[in-house]
Length: 170
Image 1: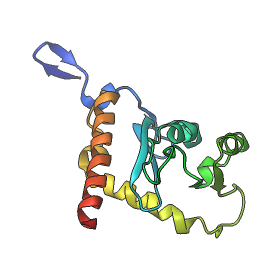
Image 2: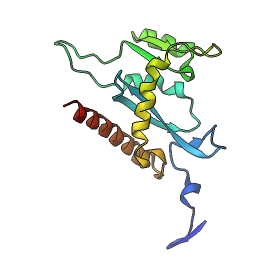
Image 3: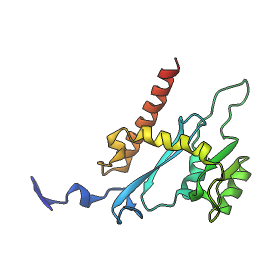
């Protein structure tokens, strides 16, 4: 507790905030997770924010549904990717079936199998995008109690990543 102008108030670390949960890898400290869906070049297409204790696979279908229409050839714009490459954290048969029903081919590494499935050839693009986002200290360390504010900074970070990539291409 810290003495403030209106009596004793909890410190920022004690407050936690919304969309936080005990992290399974950081001694139970409360934290958040960023979930990203990127294209083949690493541009973020969809993102969400959840508590640190949420399973990754619970955000797979909501991320796919959040992809905006992509302009391209004449005709109806595409709303879904052809395939999704993911790591072992997304290996659940229920979600594989849901992806197939949406017309998306899941390329997800199986749990309890040897490494070397070849998905690392595609997964590094996602990890690179996370690295780009975590150059913004506000996203690397969560200072905001409100999930709405932190989610807004996550959206702004994704916009800046896209802007910088487009700036380099011209």
